[in-house]
Length: 383
Image (cartoon, rainbow, N blue to C red):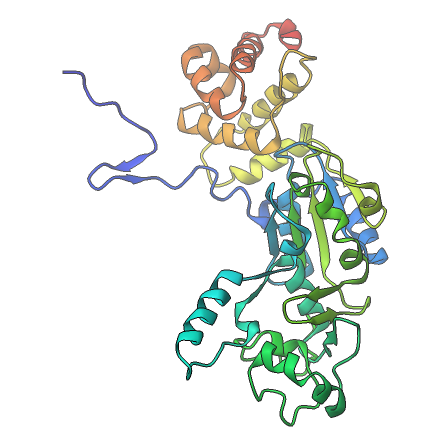
């Protein structure tokens, strides 16, 4: 009977447990080193009051840059929305649970004494919507769909039925204004002592190019004015330009964003991390590991070779994949010196490349390039 295989990822078999992922700490904001020009691009976007669109190859650190920005700005929690192929513009702002509302309406219809829930109870704000709400602050006056400020008893009386449906029957009695705080009934306090409650958040809209082409165009007004309508409640939220969220939008350029949308944004292309910058990133990620002094330099040298290999590779590895590969190499025993390890164990080198290169032909070509480099062959650059 064949012996059972050993897996380096296993912590125990009975019960079955795995070690923490090797890359678990790679997205920590304090490990991120922004590329040259990113800080200035963010500054320009904030000065203009515009979102910043970040492009760059997958794994180049676009998402991590938003986490870094939230940390350095002291903006507390990052508000993140991961775009899908079905994402509509309104999804970035809020979600309204029509199914739950229908179910509750049917139940209250069967029970004459049951009271319908206020519509605000079916409302959940997503990243961009919450960012606008927080910037507006709890005391910001809400507007009707037509743009009338709900400030004063006369106008509240005018919209009594709408407000009762939104916030509960009898809610509007003796009210002077309808405020943002009313949209967040479960939050006990929306302000710190001695402030106005307005909070600037960093909003990350990740991989917007996945969405249908009309999605960015559906957000033109919201992005430019930081105003949005909650159609189900018939209410509009508005903040002024002096306090607004910092919006970061990433794209992998799977398809171009519409020109009218881009006109309202600042733009920065995240360059690939190479040379000394990559060495610094590697040393930061591996600083608590036992590795030779040259290990990070060797990884960076190999990464440069792979990227300089003309058209030999179908897809060049990104920074995230290089970091992941370095962790695998250490677990495979290469931390004492990559060149010597690769020469001694080409089979294990091939296994490690499943973390770095994502096509079978690329793995074969990459192994050839790395083995030539390990042997000192000057032709390694050409594969």
